[in-house]
Image (cartoon, rainbow, N blue to C red; front, side, top):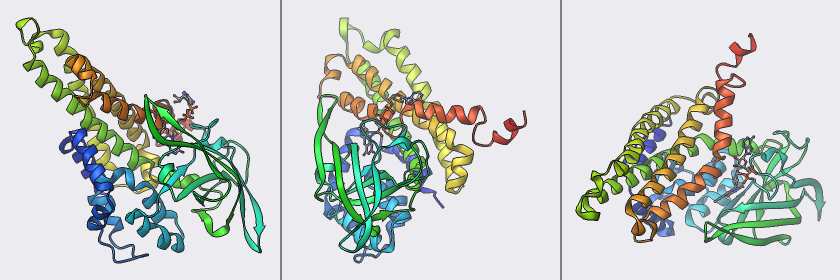
Length: 374
Ligand SMILES: Cc1cc2nc3c(=O)[nH]c(=O)nc-3n(C[C@H](O)[C@H](O)[C@H](O)COP(=O)(O)OP(=O)(O)OC[C@H]3O[C@@H](n4cnc5c(N)ncnc54)[C@H](O)[C@@H]3O)c2cc1C
C-alpha cells in the first residue's frame, strides 16, 4: 500500500544525490503552474490523484505535503474542499503551530489555550497563546494552531488543532528569527483573544497530536534518505577533489589523513543505506499503528544517524576542499546548514535516541510484554 516509502528512500538516497539539483528543483516546483501540471485535478474538492502525489511525487515535493496529507487524513469534508485544491494552487498556505517559546520537545506542555465561547450566536473557541518557529509565516493564509482544550499540562490528550486565518485580528508576528547567519521565514507569533467557530477545529477534538503523529514516520525516513543522499554527494565530491588537487606537487588523496575520515564516512553510508532501505521496505508492509508498535525505533535510528552523518560529511567535505569548501563556490556550507536543522526539527536527535531507548529497554514496543514479566 505504501510502496512509495521504499521508492522514496531509494531515490532520495541515490538518484537525487546532488543537493544543489534538489534545491533548484524544489524552487522550480514552487511555481503554481508546475504544481497544476503535475496534479491535474479537475476542480475544488476533487481529491482524485492526491493520494498519488504521495507516491510518485513525494521526492520532489516532500516539504510541501505535510499539511495536504494531514488535511486529507483529518480535515472535515468542508476543509478538504476549501483547502486542498487551493493549497495545490498556491493560494492557501499553512503554518504548523505546535512549538512555543517555552515548550518544544515537550509539546504536551504547550501553554496556548482554547476556551469555549460564543460570538454573534456562533459557537466556537477563543484562542490565546504564542507559537515559535512558524515556517512560512510570511506567506501563510492559515495558521494551524495547537491549543489545550482540556486536561492538564503533560497530557497528550486534551490538545486540539484549529485553523486560524493568518490575518485575523489578534494574530501578531513578533519576529522572524535569524538562524545560522541567515534570515528566515520562521516566525514567533502571538494569538490574542482569537475567536474561531467550531468548524475551525482540525482533526479530532482533544486529540490533535494524532495529526502530528500521523506523518512523523514517513517524514523521518524521508529526511534520513535525503541526508544519506547528501552524505554520498559530499563524499564523492571530496574524493574527486582530492584526486585532482596537488598541494606540494602530490595528489591530496595520497595522504591517509585525507583518506581515512572519508573511508569512515563511506563505510557508515553503506551501512546506513541498508538500514534505511530495510526499514522503508518494512514500513510499506505495515499499517501506521504497526509501524509505531514494531519499528518506530528503527525509523528513529535511520533519522538520527543519517542527519548526523550528513553534517559530518559536509564538515569533512569543507575540510578536504580547504578555503573553497568553506565558500559558496561549493555547496557544502549550504548542505551543512540545511541538514544541521534536521538534527533538531523532526524531533531532535536526543528525542530520537529516547525513542530507541524506550524500545530497547522494553518500555514500549514489541518487548514491552516480555519485560513486564521480569
Ligand atoms: C529550522 C526550524 C524549523 C522549525 N519549524 C517548525 C514548525 O514549522 N512548526 C513548529 O511547531 N515547530 C517548528 N520548529 C521547532 C522544532 O520542532 C523544535 O525546535 C524542536 O522540536 C526542539 O524543541 P526546542 O527547540 O524547544 O528544544 P527543547 O525541547 O527545549 O530541547 C533543547 C535540547 O534539549 C534536548 N532534550 C530535550 N528533552 C530531552 C530529554 N528528555 N533528554 C535529553 N535531551 C533532551 C533536545 O534534544 C534539545 O537538544 C522548527 C525548528 C527549527 C530550528
